[in-house]
Length: 274
Image 1 (spheres, rainbow, N blue to C red):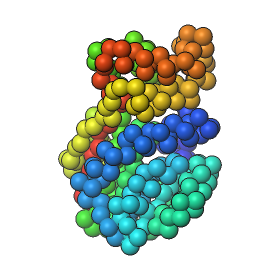
Image 2 (tube, rainbow, N blue to C red; image 1 turned 60 degrees about the horizontal axis):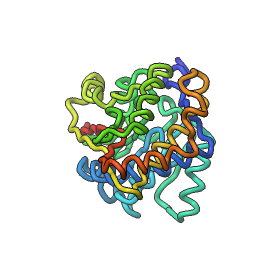
Image 3 (cartoon, rainbow, N blue to C red; image 1 turned 120 degrees about the vertical axis):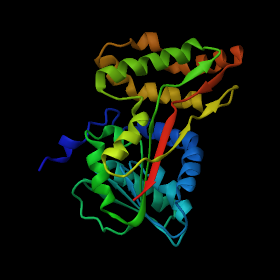
């Protein structure tokens, strides 16, 4: 049987401290949209939920609010360090209905009685996501729910802001080099159907903001900061050209000056009962 590394593309950002900060900021920006879609999909109090590729625990923590104290959320991730961070977070927050396990979701011995299986920004790292979904469906009770959220496109600013367009141009170049598909979300219906799960319900959303105080500028810069080693590895831009320490202020000033509206990376969420 193929091992985990044969089935999962490498996570190029790693989990150094800047990436942890980026993920925490990302949760603040995307969680309201994710929570709305999970509620619409049918996540409710008392459910037993599996969070696949749980990382530092953002989605698990969000789901824990929806299932309440009578429900239970289990997060699974193959990375020991992120599972340690996630466990530490729930302990510090005093949350009792969330736990994390370290393991390969393809082969880890999980009970087959989950009411729902969820994931955010995980399937795009899987080499054959339809096979994974077919496997996950076996872990559900009859009538159980599968729900995943993935990147659908690059963002933009209107009127156009040169600093934001520059960041997204770097993302596009990175995508070519490291194999990240920024339109992966549009593949979700085909993946669900190939897995034998039928045609899923879909939701499209993108955090949108403007003005001097929006958190989105910080998230954009944190993304570039954590990508810097890869940007330099492929000679996509120099440290001086990016000037990371002034980038956030330059973005903010340009958005305010042009009175632009900014969207971050749109996501598509897909869900279906099995």
